[in-house]
Figure 1: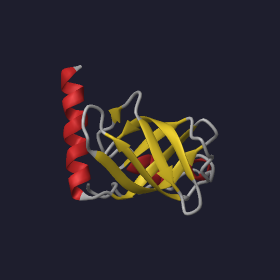
Figure 2 (figure 1 turned 135 degrees about the vertical axis):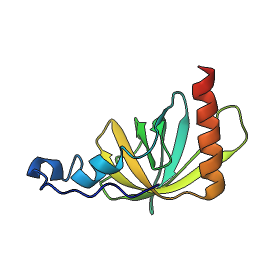
Figure 3 (figure 1 turned 180 degrees about the horizontal axis):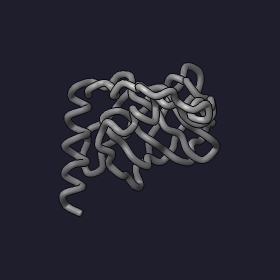
Figure 4 (figure 1 turned 135 degrees about the horizontal axis):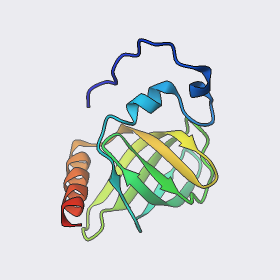
Length: 131
């Protein structure tokens, strides 16, 4: 995806609170089409722990999930995986936590293999067309 547009105005300090978001992530998260998800269980791994959560939405840039079994701090690097519904294909991606609390977490993908990107886009685009 293209980089976010340049910021010419000085951002206000409340955009830079460490526990919510940043001006860069606010601009960045609007760059990709987001697909809503329901009833998709994902697994995630950190350097030391493993957990599970429910996928809320996904895009080519990142995803959000709720009810994580482990709290994930900002900037934590994780690996997520889940089986695409109705298929035998397991989607995997590496990412960094950009937003989170006890109820939900959002990550920005840092590495998604090309095959995973294509399969994910096709799968969720098809789901949106059939709704």
